[in-house]
Image (cartoon, rainbow, N blue to C red; front, side, top):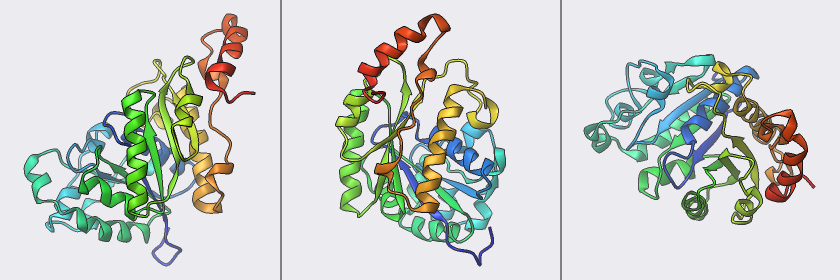
Length: 274
């Protein structure tokens, strides 16, 4: 995408608790978007616990922290990553964290939005200043949680914080879902739509992105379907509340002998199959 074209869509991927799948979601959605022909950039804005570069196993010349400290340009930080996505990784040192100015993230995102179709901003956990800034910079926010009660409660708090900075929440994503997860109860905790779930996929490789490295896995299928919904939100302007929930019963059937049992149980546990 050239600089002369329409500005891209900025989506912040957030959640109140660490380890719920924000970075995993960012890289898999980015990989799926690239498969669909969209130039996509991912920014590791988790200034305290950056892990994007490590997850993708990439080397880089300059980090987001250096850019936010005024020691590098946005162009310096652009790094090629798997599937054709571009990333700006962060650092994990306390010194880099101390020198980075979150307020400068606005200029970084503005620069990227003029050069890419989609900019995904991976954020840190908690309710600090550096996690709040990306919420206010986004066109839309995807909130990620696991079924854990604490994670769900922290996601609700993050949604409330997003409202205070005029952030637009697209919806929620529940990761690490099993056939015993009560998705309906989680959805009832939210004042925003649940866009989908990502199943626990024990057979999938840990080499991210799964969409690229384990393309036939259930988790990769879920991320592709989720990305299809997000594409319509980003580029067609559909209301996320009108989108179909990304959840396939077959993800939760272990073998043919359990099909009937699983179909009966999932209807009551998920509450989305009718």
